[in-house]
Image 1 (cartoon, rainbow, N blue to C red):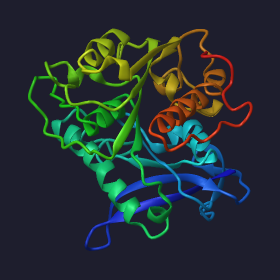
Image 2 (cartoon, rainbow, N blue to C red; image 1 turned 135 degrees about the horizontal axis):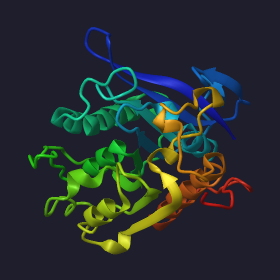
Image 3 (cartoon, rainbow, N blue to C red; image 1 turned 180 degrees about the vertical axis):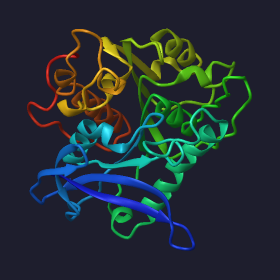
Image 4 (tube, rainbow, N blue to C red; image 1 turned 135 degrees about the vertical axis):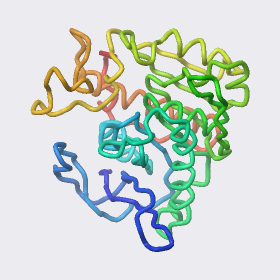
Length: 302
């Protein structure tokens, strides 16, 4: 199986772009290295979707980020049968970051995911191919806060004001990578979260500290549904796909890792680890897993 790639755009009544996402999905069309800005992805652009029904995964980027920052994970999922939706959050993405650090942004981001999921499931091609089962929502940094809100979390601003977010019952599992859990420290903030939850934290992360994440997630009622794993020596940005050498410089924090951390090696392991976890949650729901190809998992956590 290969990974296909297409843009997915929701338009308003005047046919103006309202929301956009990148879709990665399984295809039988052979892929080839293709330039996407500074990145090279091994994909089949605009290829036909592979036959069958494909479970849906949403991946929400961090504040000021972009869909392409999670390409190592999204492409592996696509090659193993998943339909992956990578939104670009308006007002809080690369080149469009006017709403960063606002309560409006905390309200809007989960709505973006709901709107894109609605549109995808209504699409003549992709909606018909989406598996009729709960979706998995993945988030990094502020994206982790976004998917927690979508699964029933009740965020508050840094000043303690509640942020009204409607949960989406279609979310059946969560994967959080260095999530911004400071928005869920109020009593009862995660009382309504019941989906199984995998969290990866970074040992050296001053932005979303492991200790804060664990305090917040202690508010989930059923702790048996939670798995937390700290990645040794990792930093906050270690979950982003490796950057080309041309983008490495001391001023560009997302490309930097703590001394001795091998991001290339880590990304040969952790997408397969997440894939296995998602597969296992599907088996628990009785819908069957999608097997990981030999060698896809790697052998080290960095």
